[in-house]
Image (spheres, helix red, strand yellow):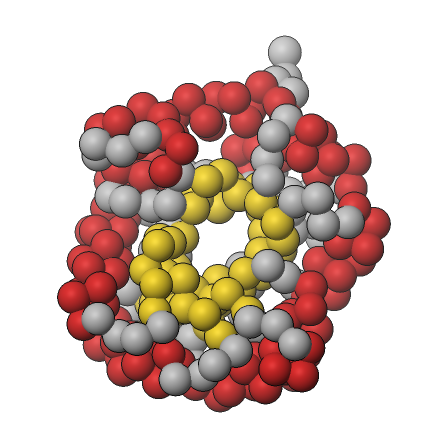
Length: 232
């Protein structure tokens, strides 16, 4: 029998709790994000009713439609690549942007946040693996980018995000997650003004348990909650 969305979420929360315990943390230290790309509205509502309080969207337009339909009773986070020309919409729609990876985007987000009268919470996306197909600032350029972005008054750096390569064995992703945690600790040690390093957004359906063991505070889960996405 196919498990309900609520059942799937309970299983994931149990796995998160066990993995958090392994790393000496509490389950409450890790937040579960439901990734809702291409997911029907009624299934998203099921996840919300099961207690999910962060939804992650990959595209501004899809996020806009869903937010208009479902409102802001939960947090909506932008996790996909963000084009500079969509910054003006993103700062009004999303509670946090996980994919800040370049200064040109930071400047535009800061400007649009100032015009909207808000401070936008952001994560710096880091390409830990160096894989060409992955987005994110290269590891060696991450701290200089954090320093530059920290000077922008209408952005608030909350932490880091990464997406490792796909591995059949989730253990192979562990070095990427560990490297992001080490980078976070280095940034904390730098004591850069106006920078918080509360969040490590890392881990998806196939490897979230390993990510939690390595310090994830937000895991981004789509397939394990909603099942396989339909192919176009």
